[in-house]
Image (cartoon, rainbow, N blue to C red; front, top):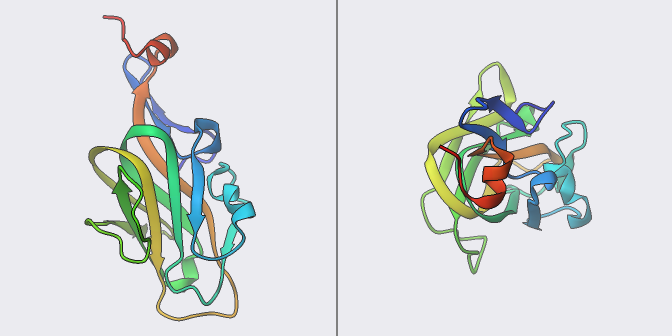
Length: 171
């Protein structure tokens, strides 16, 4: 994520890569596996200094993120506690599952950045989704909470604000 802006790259002639998960984009957290749900907006507030804390006993910290509608997503990323050796998988869903403990479908494996082990991301073919389930796997419990600073879900949106509002682009 580019923490200074929701826009990662801007080619104003066509489209921009925009973080659809953020509060400013009307993203919202529906569920967390542990911790206080009241603090969950910290996960999508575009401020890496604010963190959400999962219970140290939660071996599979999980977040269910709802986008503002069916949105085209092609990249996900997260910043989280890097010294835990946690792995991150993200499920792309059009409908909410009945259970978050046994998610169906194939998750996207997010790879950690070798230079920044607390950051993980994955690029994939653009997919229209409404919900994203971010799920970390930790090898052992801890007395300290497991923290996550940011969740991101990038999609291409029109750079022309009039086209974005009307759903049409000028030729």
